[in-house]
Amino acid sequence: QPWANYEWSKTTFQMDFEGFSDMWTSVMSAGLGMMTNFHPGLVNAVGAFPVNQAVLDKYKDVGAGAFSDYHTNYFETTEAVMAGDEIFISYGEQWLESRAYLEHVPLWDNYDTADRLVASLLALRNDTQVGDAALEALYTTIRDAFIDDGRTATVLVHLDTVSDLEAVAAAGGTAATTSTRRSTEWLEEHGYCIDHIYVKNSTIRQAGKG
Image 1 (cartoon, rainbow, N blue to C red):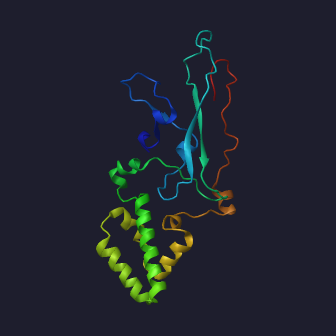
Image 2: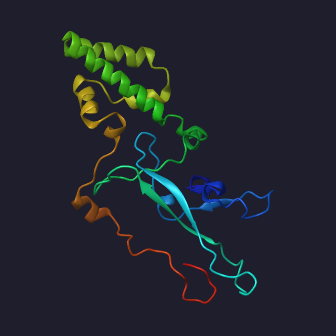
Image 3: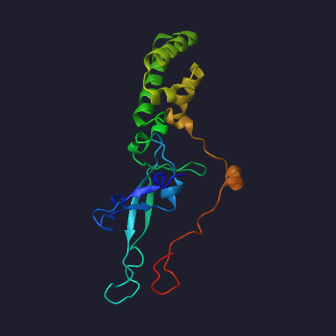
């Protein structure tokens, strides 16, 4: 993967002065900053909150300046995350919009548009008792003839039947249907525990943190 897919803005980590004004400075956010995916419709964590700690005195320590004082950052979940749920953070929708090869990936507004369409159709059925076949025909016409945004079309492409629309409503929205909670068995087979990976002062004098 290109480095540009993982670098973070220096401003996000308050590192504006790490380099000269005419230099391009970016940050590698190891840990959640690199492992976590971005799903515009399912963001459930926010960050990054940088932790800056000057551990050496530039007037006394010969190692001062050899490593950065910006040594970690953390994220916070914005809702309950259960075992097996995926953590999603936001890279900013411009991250998707600036990459032509991701032009089909839905943004938040696209999921919202799809959710409102599904809700309207189900409300129509409840209010008028229209049959499933007629409702599906109406939905297909709207999707195929009137939805001209490619990202919204991506959200709707796998929805065909009234049962599909009901599944969206039951899940809490179109975005929710795109992510699956993994079982404990799946996690035990495919997951990796990273609790033992942490940052602390180096055992080597004046070598910073590691």
